[in-house]
Amino acid sequence: MTGKLNIVGIGPGSTELITPMAKNAIESADIILGYKPYVEMVNALITHQQVKSSGMTREVDRARLAVEHAMDGKTVTVLSSGDAGIYAMGSIVYEVLKDKGWQGNNTFPVQMVPGITAANSCASLVGTPLGHDACTISLSDLLTPWSLIEKRIEAAAVADFAITFYNPRSRRRIEQIEIAQRILLAHRSPDTPVAIIDNAYRPEQRIEISDLASFTQCEFAMTAAVIIGNSQSYRFGDLIITPRGYDNKYHLDSGQVKLGQQRGRTLQTEES
Image (tube, rainbow, N blue to C red; front, side):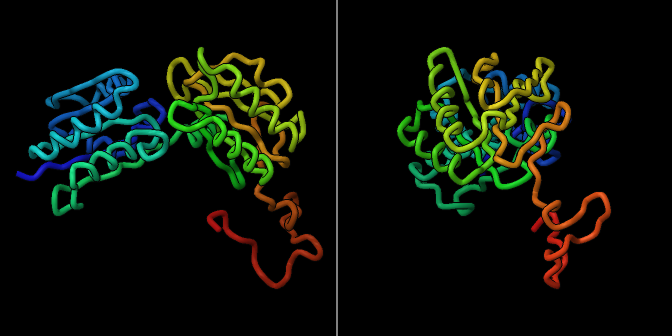
């Protein structure tokens, strides 16, 4: 009997934002493995499946167990919040597969099921802070040296990316976000808008809009995402807008092309 392994992103936590593809992978599984809070988020979809939940820092154990069950012919679903390929279970599962000698679908099929990652879900609650080029940076130095993280912050600051910080602060890590703030202040204005979104799309959701000079005074921890605008971002009421650049070419109030901007070509689509 051939097993199957699904690596599933369940989004930010709301059942309304779990994709149909993810729901199918959960409902059709023989075994579901995940961090206990993530399993609780999909309780409504669990009927006959065997559930094996475990605590934080047990990612390697979950990955090994998932691969072993799939090798035994079971249909296995591993849960991650957000997207399983972004700071989540996808990478470690594939590393275990490599160590176990997995030879692609000739051994058994493995499917990555995409989910809505924190950058997207959090940004949607505060307008379009990621409306132009953007990046994500995790401030957790558990698996990545802090010196390397600092280099990435500096590079993103110089390149004027809008930035989403994952894992911004914890009881143990209280200085890293302040170091990140200092690096960014060397490259962009103190009044650059900042959004702090905690527990997006969950009952305990909390949103705070601040600026680069003072956002570290706000209350937030590991469950929050911190979105820093770029040099063009601005406040629009309780929202943050990062313009794509259309107004540089078009008079948005009239739809007319600005002088010197036509150059014989049409406006790029929003997918360009």
